[in-house]
Image (tube, rainbow, N blue to C red; front, side, top):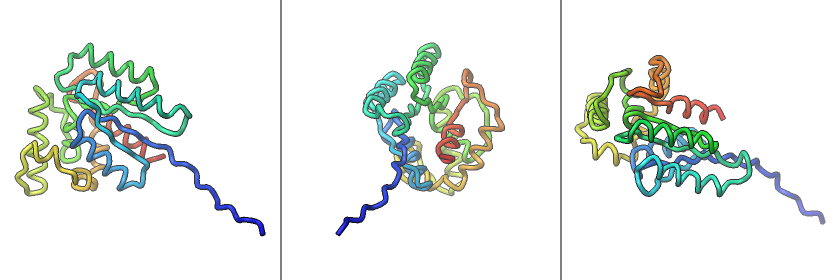
Length: 195
């Protein structure tokens, strides 16, 4: 008797995000993947500098030599990184075929766009985080501090109904990569969701 073979399922390409931290951005991206049935993994690197994020992404890229099996992303916060150094790392990222997912001054700017449309020039990442914390607490009638929000595993679940408005907010602001604030998270996420 002949054995029946099972039909093979096509392999879903992996979207691998290298994050500078082990908390908020990682939790958000993992929630995005789960909520949209996307083969997405978010990993943190050791060290928070853009160079460390890129180095970790290069190591992961080498693990996926076959084209189409994985797309690697560097989730960058500019934070206190010097402009020239930051631009150099982002350019190197693009040259290597790694997709930069950028937020200036910090990742919380992307989260803030879920709650309000703003192109306010923040003095630093701390000020942006405070604006996000205030908007989040106002929206959800909570009293979290920034440390609690960054550790919140449910951050994507909290904000997922506001993803489309966040994308719309970012698109309507015509943000410039060389200025603060800036994010291209809306473009990255739109490209993933359409796959």
